[in-house]
Image (cartoon, rainbow, N blue to C red; front, side, top):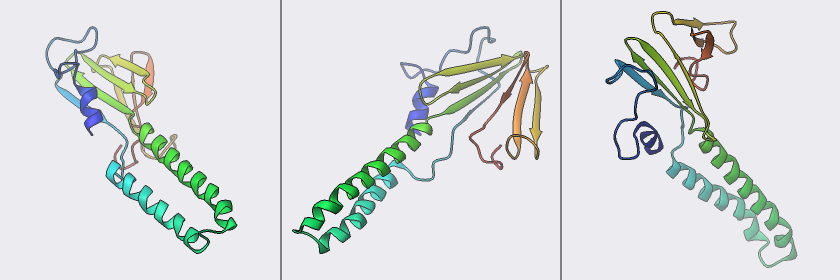
Length: 162
């Protein structure tokens, strides 16, 4: 959550400037969406310690033998792979979408984990919101249409959250 706070504020802690062409003043409504993370960083560390402990149990029986040197690289590879996959999962969790609504403009700013930023804006009077309960790409497929484009909103959210 601390990472998300940094995205919502500027360099000096002030709110970010509105998008180019946005009406002056704060938006009427603003929401930041991000993927759910069921395990906090502390839980990740505890899981890695627990996994290492469990994987090292078989080595206790063969400590000091040649078999230990055969098993040890596989344990190390397994732990390294688990660490890498979990770290990648957390990196993917840095994805955010910020929706802001002014009287004359609605904007959606999507920040990808790699740093790419994709923006969309339209006049809220002409924007169509569509929720397709079934038959879309996913269950409860949520889209915004306006300004000549259709965008998917909250693709990373669960069907109930959309």
